[in-house]
Length: 355
Image (cartoon, rainbow, N blue to C red):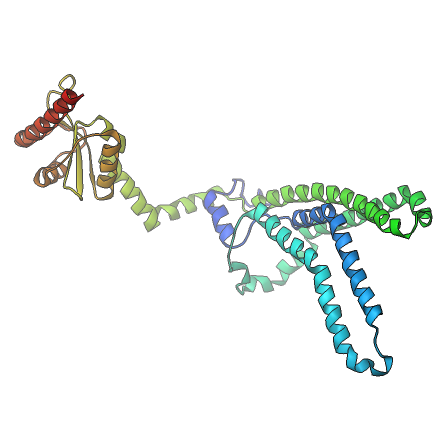
């Protein structure tokens, strides 16, 4: 269908981001369910023992304390509160596991996402044509087929396990009452483990299919890509970022500070990297210049590379205003630059003599 509409191009990163903001992400409920069931299968032995022990305590207390039939209406409140309390105690591990695995299953598939877009009212949701497609469309048919397949396979697994364990079940009366419970746990654990493997494979396959369907739905035409590009070009934020990047490129690169002989500062607003190597340069050359944030970064770089920094406000302003990176220092500024270079060379000479 996408190809018939001319949508032959993969969705752009912006298209995917916009869809994510609307809550449209590929997610498999089967994979989350398989994860929950797999954890239940692994923890079944401990959970079954926990439930059996707590249920036995509850039943024993009920039979031990008993209640007066003649006065049962006065004891119903106590019986009900105890039943609710024990029900919460018995179901607590299952609720905690279900809650944590549901969160983890969704985070593993789509990451952390918080959006209220799907909750907003929309007339499209009331469209009978869309509703008809949702009920009788390809997705609905695939979902029905998938659920029927799961049902048949789960029933098949169960019958096969019971068939293989039929002899053991028929002779369970001979092993004594204390051993029946561990036997049943082993039987159910084996069935649950096999089902968990099957559901995990099905969940992974469904997740791959959901990703494919999601990307298929977001396919774009060449015209849509062009329109999106034009829209991004007109975005004020994109424009401001591009201008800032362009100014940074015009001001030279931060790495040019590494080759500088001295960094002249304002001290806070401007920074100009000057190089004067007698073997290479006939006159001092401006390598890079920066203002505000760029100047701050240049000074940090100079400290890292141990490039001398000298404050000279008038000279820094003049160099930033009149000279571009790669240009030689103007003749009228030779005297001021020479004095600064002399200080730098003297400091280097004293440093060598100390060593």
